[in-house]
Image 1 (cartoon, rainbow, N blue to C red):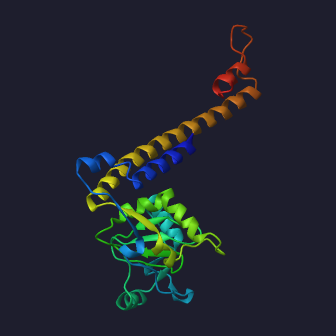
Image 2: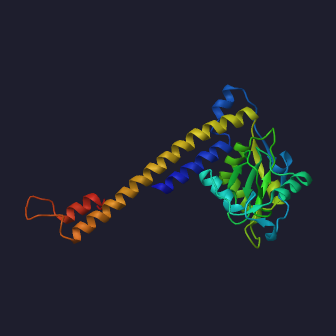
Image 3: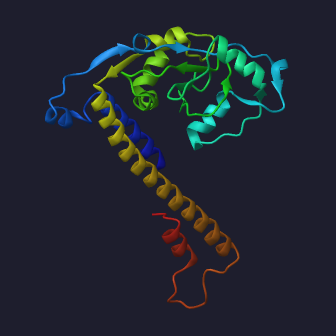
Length: 252
């Protein structure tokens, strides 16, 4: 049952990035057809400068690895365990720059495609495991974030990493990923529709999971009572324990 929600989510995202989800909206607003553009032709994709273990300090500027970005992707929060000094952070910021609000960080080794849109907090991040997509006026980072969640992105990634010694999406490969690019106003409409649809799908999934948990708890309770001989009496008109189990454990 719960797996069906992931299938439905994938179908919704596929319709979003093939234009089907907003086809009627596009006709009503007389919007032109989409472009298909390599992400690297739209914006810069970069990584961080190397930070060595002996540069870690007990407190200071949070240093994010892939695990922190996964936390932010999954829950919106993270508790960093590594830090660099304020002086080191300011030196990197002055010489090379640091992520700006609106940039997108993407996990790019092992678990590929967990994302976080940078906010106003100060932090730095680990090179290699994370890739930084710079903010671009032509491309909504929320739109790109949804695209990265889609199978359309995953298929391209699988093609690029096939035959590699390890599962990694390099900057060179990332730049070559083809993105369907509608107008800015249609990007916003797609985001609005996806926000609404996927929120409902998530709520339905959570309700289904809660029901399954209740059923599992009921199964255990009834089985415990059955083995204790607590489900029936000597009344011949009462349903047998077997019949009760069939009813509540959903056997046929």
